[in-house]
Structures are given as structure tokens and as C-alpha cells.
Image (cartoon, rainbow, N blue to C red; front, side, top):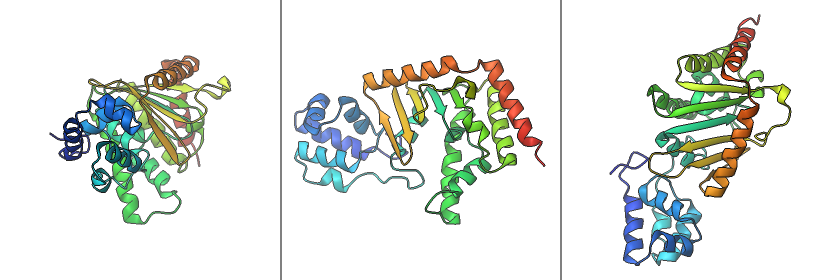
Length: 270
């Protein structure tokens, strides 16, 4: 059975077999390995790749030596380790709510925008490596080719529109891309204008995801760090923050008007 990583879920199946052989429920293994039951379920189903620390604690709890630690599934080096679990969950989500503080979310980025952001990375990437990273990022956006799923909302801080990433031409194309998706009804777009001042989402980027067969999760990200949250209490709190931010955003019609006007401003540069 393919897992979220496009390969047979040998790792998750083996983990489940060892847990059952030890006579443990997911709840009992979670307690022994200092994890949540939900996290164990995700690992067994292949929806997540365990961290090295996860694998070490599972080996200890199951008495499997260092087998789980030594045979971790290979990670994709075109995304940050901390983002990889969120990227795979993103591909399974039926609903996604994005908040962007300073950058356009990766799932909505055009090639020119993505190429500039990735090309500005430090340490610098070689041309071939940069191309692979760009291809991965553009691949994320392919889920929007489905006309229905996921249902997607994007909440953009005005700062993500005003900072000219890559220059006026790149920004004009990028914002126009978001406008086209919104005008077609594929996404719902809102802008949090500067006039709002302080708001509940100013600490960093946030993604909320809902699924057909598992509880909702949230993903928050800052400089060089990101975390998937599956604790129901934490997810509810972050959903509440998003709702407060959305309540202060411009309505759809006014948001689209601002997006169009901003794209035109970039397009009029000399």
C-alpha cells in the first residue's frame, strides 16, 4: 500500500508489527516512547517520517535495538527537514488555510518568485541543486490543478505584497497569479492590511489542515524552524488565532481589489 512518500510503507508496517508483537496498543507505545497516540498512528500509516529522536525512543520502548534508528526512510533534501512532514500532509489535506507574513506561501509561488527566493538562500546552492528545489516547490502547487480538493484559503499580510521579492516584474506576475486563482474560485484570498496594526498572527507563518480520515493539524514556521502540531488543544488555539486574523482582514471583494491594484503598481515600473 503506497504511503504519503510514494513508496510502500515498509517502515510503518514493520513498526506496527513490532508493536503488536509486544502486545502494546498505540496508546501504550506512545506512553512508553513519550509521544502522542496520534503521532504513532501517523508513523504506522506512513503519513509521517520519524525524527532520529522518535526512532531512538521507539527502539528503546520496543526493545528492537537500533533497527528503527538505522533504517529511517530517506528524506527529500530539497526541503528543510522540519518542513517535510508538513509537505506530505499538505498533499493529503481536504482543506488548507494558509497565513503568510512576509513571503507568498510556497504552494502559491510562481517559478520566477520561487527561483529568486531559493536562489537567495544562504549558504548558496549550486545551479543543479537550486533547480531541484524549485521543481519541488512548484510540484506542491500541482494540487491546485484539482478543481475541488483541497479547499484552500490564503490570508496574506500586506507586508508579503509590498516587499518586492525578485523585483517589480516578479511581483506583478506573482500577485496576478494569486488573483487568477481567486477569480476562478479555486482559492479564497484575504489581505490583512497595514492599517490593522498588531494582529494575532504576527509571530510567523501558519498553515491549518483538515483531512478526511484523521484529526486536523497545524504547522507553524519561523526562521530556520517549523513544527507540525497535532495536540488537539494546540490546534484549536492556532485555529482561533487564524479566525481572529481573518476577522480583521479585508473582505474578499476589497482584498481582490487591493491585490489587483498592487499588481498594476508593480507593472507600471520603469
